[in-house]
Figure (tube, rainbow over the protein chains, first blue to last red):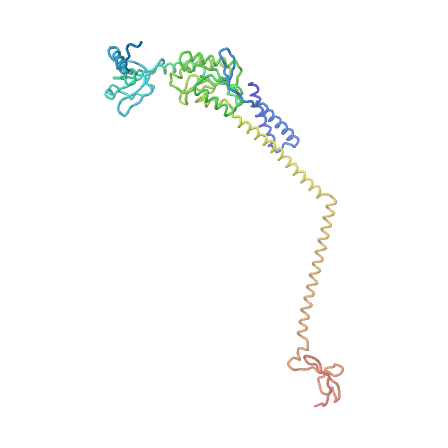
Length: 69
Length: 399
């Protein structure tokens, strides 16, 4: 789990970096296309990482079992 | 069968007498910490004395105020001399204070300071041991009481910020006997589950209520926990040992939930914003490149032989037009000059001299007659008037 968190945070950072690079005017159109593709892919990954299933609070009992709170 | 039935008053009076007959209850010194201290407008002082095991209601009537030589306030450790009696109206016993003195520094406070110093010296509060709180926690452990406001606050805030985060509660005892061990067990149990972050805490209460969070076993459990821990004990103003050891201190359980649970909508907006920036950038780049291509195209076109020829043709046509215009202008000027000359000539015309009745006379050969010697009787002459001409015959010549 925590490695995935890292990835979400890291991926967001990477997207920021890609945008920063694209904002530099010297970047060629070809490179821009590549950067854009990478950025869109990474954003898709970020969205996928957000597992959108609503969670109920769980409670851990003395035997180490989980049940709905 | 009920034999003896007593009224409430009878029982309360009976108990009151029991206390009254007890010599010790009539003159007793009690030490403890002051809480709920209220100075009533009547001059009476109502307060509660407490220690880690319990509380005792107390009152100092206005008539005994000289027995209090300082301004008593919440948290003061005092020794009260007085009597313990029954207050019949409420069926409660209370301490009637006659004298109140300060009792050095508070016991709980001393214990807190001693443990704080000890743990600090061991480096348990050192910032290099503080683990960062993950920005995007997905599974969050909560060690708190299963009843009470704290767990509900955490649950509500979490659901509002991000319903997709999994909360796992370890229902702990947070005050009284065994609370510290229960909290420590909870931290250790949740630490084995590989969660992203733990919230350890409880809602507000008196210093005694919060005491478990000042116990060394809780401090150690937090320090040894591999999962980052956010402490959330009581209110903003309460600081416990647990707060010093935790990786982050939240002022309240609600605040802890705000810190631990990332705002789902904000993240979604951030992602959408980044997508917009990426696309905007790309679009701009494409537009800019298109514009550059267009510029190049027109520059190239301008340099083509066809375009140069056309340019020359246009130049030539321009010249032609200019010449024509010049010619027209010259002609007009000349016409004007001629007109002026004509007018001048007109002004000089001999006919003009005939105005006023004069006439110009010529012989038949249109020769001007200046003398009568030039004509004989019977000759034909022409008389030019201002308007028109007359042919006449000479009938007489007068010398």
